[in-house]
Image 1 (cartoon, one colour):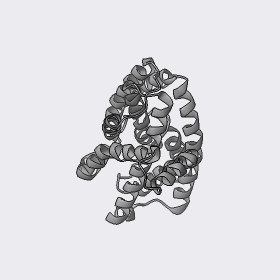
Image 2 (spheres, helix red, strand yellow):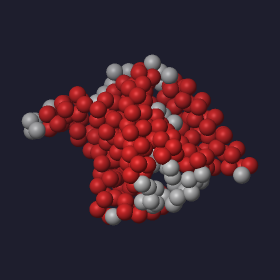
Image 3 (cartoon, one colour):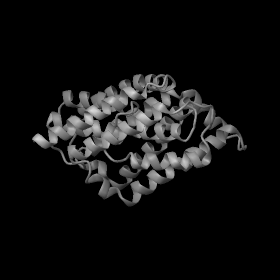
Image 4 (tube, helix red, strand yellow):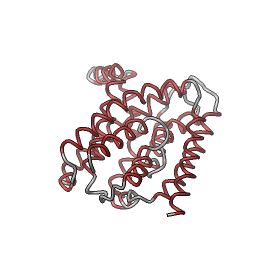
Length: 264
């Protein structure tokens, strides 16, 4: 992988982590188009760096909310911030379980299986279309909602299923306020990303990477900048109920992926 490829993949990750079009699916498509034939373990560090960049951009966009959460936690009181933190923890359980016990099975799906990505993108399109038709309410995310949204996040580990698309759509279909659904969706993934980075560091998996420092740096910067823009934009789009545009895009991208796989 060269610096140009790193910049392209960084922009793809930054945009698609927050836009409901599947970052993992688009990264697989991007690698296939760019001719990146590295094995999943060899490109693991680069992938981790990209996810770290988008997690950092989330913290920047929601810095006030994050500061309030930490402030509330250290007061050791049953306040709104503490309750929100518990909901975040509950939402993490399904994805953490899948990540710990089915890691090898998941890695096998990230090897350029474009036809699988295509079908998953079509499923994402259906979820977005259903959510776009749902009526907006002022209902907050409940404990039960948090766990169900967490299940959606676990399913979204599959390449082609949009994490933000699946979690926001599930939350909206459960009757939650759209803006609250988007904010919860973006914040709930941050602990998982940092947890995954810590696990990979402890396991020593990142040492198998073949990516050079300039490639990692360019990927990080482009993913971070693109993530800042996409995160802010996505909240506005969800409030305006414009998810149908992304549903159409995912449908077309899915059909294109299946077509490319078939003709190849």
